[in-house]
Length: 329
Image 1 (tube, helix red, strand yellow):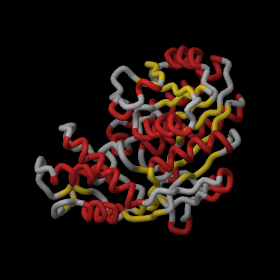
Image 2 (image 1 turned 180 degrees about the horizontal axis):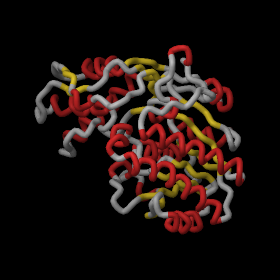
Image 3 (image 1 turned 120 degrees about the horizontal axis):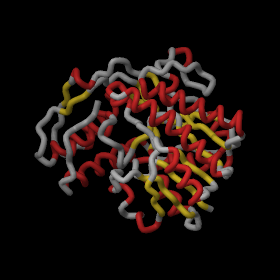
Image 4 (image 1 turned 90 degrees about the horizontal axis):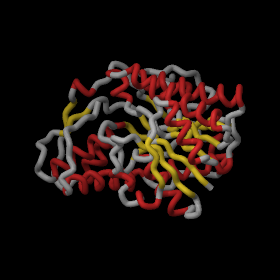
């Protein structure tokens, strides 16, 4: 079997490639990369995968790629995935996530192939839900609270439309918060872990800078998430949409306190007004019944393990001297 992963150099894409190579060694793994894509996360497996330079915003490059690979399954994980950045670059976010997805689906049609395609939407499509709507079901109204959320609504709906109109075998997921090693430091829990690692190493002074700590999140480990994505294309029918998420619900502040408790020195924190978004999503608790019943999937990795592995990831990067200015927004 040949599979194609867009976004293979990111946290989720690289973990998915690791999972497939370890559990399904006969699968041929292809990945879409841009010439400037950092390859740190795939350096250990680069000799075992086949990389292709293309860009979601260039239809011709995608047509060439899809015709060459003829994938039987596509995991579409490539995106502008940072909510905070979407407020600064809304048009670029919309173009990459909506038009880029449309280009990919058009490339499949033009190439005349019929793969099963995982379209990675997001829980951000639901926006700020009401308390009586929790846990959030797949039929909850869309109220996106950021340009990123809007872009994921568009991506979600164009995937459904291509299934309805053209029979393209798209299956959509709305993944809730997921984290772990390789998480980008634009995300809160990874920003906390990075700062703690650098304070431990003596290359940054405290306190840890934080934004809104009151937001409630149900957290999954990225390694549980990629196992779910594999099962999705194994067991679920085209045209469907599924919430996927963990079973451990905490506030962002509780995540911070757990990370502080793992530190080798005393850690303090302070609120930074620059880290407060124009609008935020503060209640994200999923109902994942539909997906669990369809696949039998259950999250397995406890939050404590996830956070410790995330902190160790940043400790290792700090020891290797691979630090950069904090970019969490």
